[in-house]
Amino acid sequence: MCLAIPGKVVSVEEAEDLTLRRAKVDFSGVQKDICLAFTPEAKPGDYVLVHVGFALSVIDEDEAQQIFRDLERMEELADEVP
Amino acid sequence: MKFLDEYRDPEAVARLASAIRKRVTRPWTLMEICGGQTHTILKSGLPDLLPPEISLLHGPGCPVCVTPVELIDRAVAIAARPEVIFTSFGDMLRVPGSSRSLFNAKAGGADVRIVYSPLDAVKLARANPSREVVFFAVGFETTAPANAMAVWQAAREGLRNFSVLVAHVLVPPAMEAILSAPDCRVNAFLAAGHVCTVMGYQEYEPIAARYRVPIVVTGFEPVDLLEGIHMAVQQLESGRAEVENQYSRSVRRDGNLPARQRIAEVFEISPRCWRGIGEIPASGLRLREPYRAFDAESRFAMEGLRSFESPECIAGLVLRGVKKPHECPAFGTLCTPESPLGAPMVSSEGACAAYHQYARHARSLRSA
Ligand code: SF4
Image 1 (cartoon, rainbow over the protein chains, first blue to last red):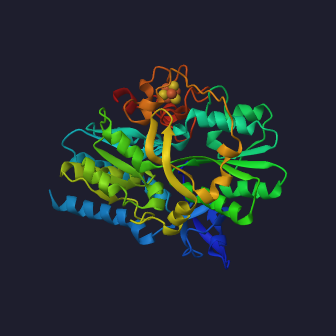
Image 2 (cartoon, rainbow over the protein chains, first blue to last red; image 1 turned 30 degrees about the vertical axis):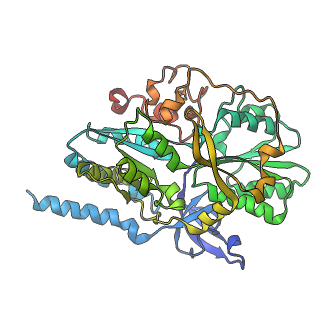
Image 3 (cartoon, rainbow over the protein chains, first blue to last red; image 1 turned 45 degrees about the horizontal axis):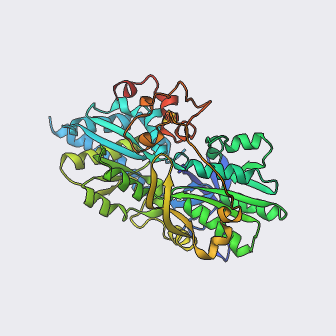
């Protein structure tokens, strides 16, 4: 039930009342109309994590890469220690 | 899909598994909280990649599974009323009540509809002013902001034919209940990344300190789970018990503030009964006073509901991580996904369903 999936914000429908801000979000070719009430900072091009019709967070690209940088470092360390 | 595929990369999975093998010196038992994580773990065969020292227990993180049978019976009774359109997420429909599920009610003519979002239920109420639209508001903290928003919008529009049957549960009190049980075997938790996306992880800090248990906020893909396990093992091996955040691409320490505010405005904390576990104080949400008019339980008050559970089902022990699904005598024989005795065999996040689907032949199951 806590399933939430990342999708790309294609376009934002601005609204004076922030709770009514909505977006078209693309999930591998399927577009859905998503509520942005909880992610007022989301803009086209961002990836958002969507759960039951609401974006719950804007995915942080830099943090997303961290694990792969850590893995490289682990590999380098392993090479140094024979 | 970006942000999914790279976290399923077999090479990264193998490297992390090897890092865990190198670090482990002693047996440790870890519990993943969320049923979605349980499914990833079994589907991608992670138990077979882990060293034998690491055991994974599956936690209570399936809101469908912990919804008390009494509430399912109530839902079925409300759905059977002719004026009602009963709306719910799909996973609730096949959960067995004392005698009937919502799916049985629908087959018997009740107007039960699956919705993708609680806002769809509000839309139905708007479009059907002569009917009563009831939404089954089930879920953890992840789902609470959406359900709060539905009630808030209905209130703002003055919709009088909309109500919610609330079965909201909270994760931290359930973790404490597990940790304080005398038969607790958990050395570390993988906390649920989407719950923490909403709530942040400050609430976990006192739990980690009080019970000396590492808690790692973890995502849902194989790479996430192995990195979470690696972080937990490093803490255990070095004697630390802290809250760490593996899922930093989505989770911030304070969580999502607008979402938390909306929850706090509509809901307040209350005691809740958990199916198979019993009542846990301050472990659920109910509507706050100004929103009580939207409470389906009082709008459709009913007497004389008597509920009972299948005596064979050991879901309570499974949900607390004391037993594994295949240790249940009914598993795969009396109880199957086609004819489930308990909710964990039904839900897409239930541990029994996950074992039945993926792990019937795996080493993890035979040696567990
Ligand atoms: S296998 Fe079926 S009967 Fe046994 S605990 Fe799981 S849901 Fe209950």
